[in-house]
Image (cartoon, rainbow, N blue to C red; front, side, top):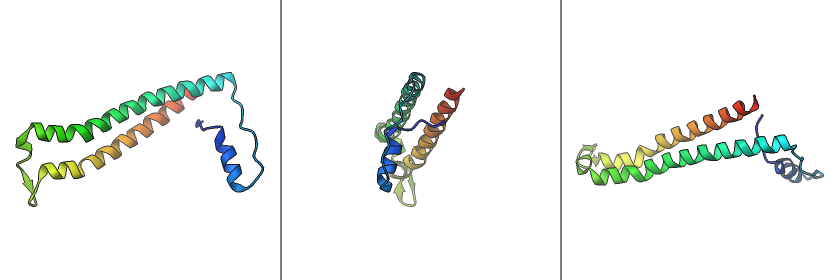
Length: 112
């Protein structure tokens, strides 16, 4: 079961030009489950954002702190430039993939 906003059906219906229906009401148990899941996913998001900040801010700081990393060159360009320009993208993709998998695992685990 995937948790979605009750407004989703209303918006989709309005876009199609059909008659809008009132948003569905959640039972107390469903509301509690949705709130637990939202809090757990927000915690995961904070972990992901921390990883993102470490990569985007930490890499330039590391390169500035260790001048030996600036000297090596590849194809005439400093490796440090390549690291800042190329390295973050695969790391960001990995963080996003990991975040998605963990959020989906939380949803599946919460169903049991």
